[in-house]
Amino acid sequence: MARSPAARGHRSRILPDGAAESAVDALSDNERIILENLHPEHTRIVTSQTGLRPRPVVERPGTAAKELEMRADTLWIDTDRSISTLTWHMQGRLTHRSEPGRITISMVHRRE
Image 1 (tube, rainbow, N blue to C red):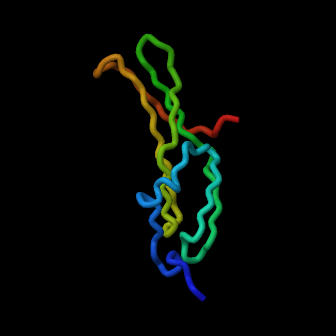
Image 2: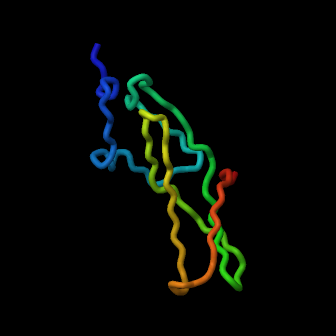
Image 3: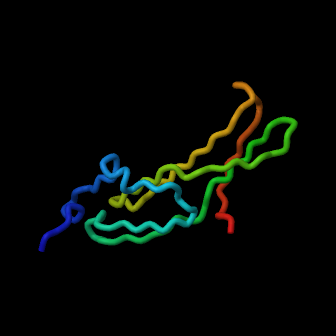
C-alpha cells in the first residue's frame, strides 16, 4: 500500500508554492478548517476557530474612546505539534508622531 508523503514523515509545504491555492480573502472568527494528508497518523483533521477576536480601543486626550477594527491576516498551522497561530493586523492614524494616547487590546467572543 502506497503511503502519502506526509505519512512518510515529509512536511507538506503550503507557502510559498501553494500560496495562490491556499489564500482566502478573509477568515471568520469561527472559520471551519479542514486539513487533509498533513499528519502521518490522521489523514483528515477538522477544527474551527474559537470565535475569539481582539478588540482594540484607542484613547486620546480630549476625545471619546474609539474601537478600532482588526483583521485576521495569517493563519499558521504546525500539524506535527498540533498548534496554530492566527496573526491579526490593524491600521490607525496619528495626528503627529508623538501624539499622546493609549491602545488597549482585549479578547472578546465574536459578535452575533
